[in-house]
Length: 362
Image (tube, rainbow, N blue to C red):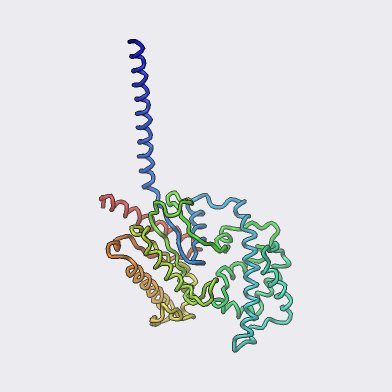
């Protein structure tokens, strides 16, 4: 009898312990669920060269720990490669333009710089680029200042000349210093071609490798300055058309039916300089654009036209039962840290209000 009572007591104690463990697990799950609601998971999408990587680096600088010295130094070969590749594009581009353009003479590199150009073009074609020395930096600077190369740079939209060109060319002596450590701006300008998507958590922000899981919003980057440029992979395809088609495709994906969309109309700094020189209607999507003014008024008019095109595309690509999902458009320049910080603050406020609305608190 005593043995039976003892066994029953042990069973009761075991059950109580299991119940306590189950209750603790439930409590932790509830806490984690509450904490999860305060984290905004953002999926960063966009066509090539739209500024996704720069936005991601800005997030690391603004909301995480930034870049330590080892991370900064890891960008040295990237930046040096950017310099070599850019000067090769300009050298080879000048030769191409000299053969094909009617006013070909202005694209012919001066005799004293031809050997330098040939040498630098060869280095630019290497898979592994040498460190940028003071001597090489001086030669690159000399070629960059050649009148034919400057004329070629002015035709950059035809030649895949990267946006970082003037920044790095203006800093060649610093970049070639033996003790060079990249600055924050150097890292932001550094260009590495990326593919795929990036998912980030906002407040706090961090990288999440389970792309698409529990995404709060899609941030779609569109480089509005690239309306007169063609793809790196296909020189017959306009970059803005590619962006349009990608945005339309993303909007129609079933996994994003209830997902908020934040459209970053990026590279406005380049757009406002370009649109007064290169007509917006060179892009097939914008062929109905008509200039109405000049200066700042024309810049604003052109921007509002592009913005409206994306708004129309959004509503055309969204089914009637999903038109109430959040859709916001932001004018951005990914290299401008203050503007990026302000933009993400607005994004965060928008998403928090959405959460309150869905919870019936607004």
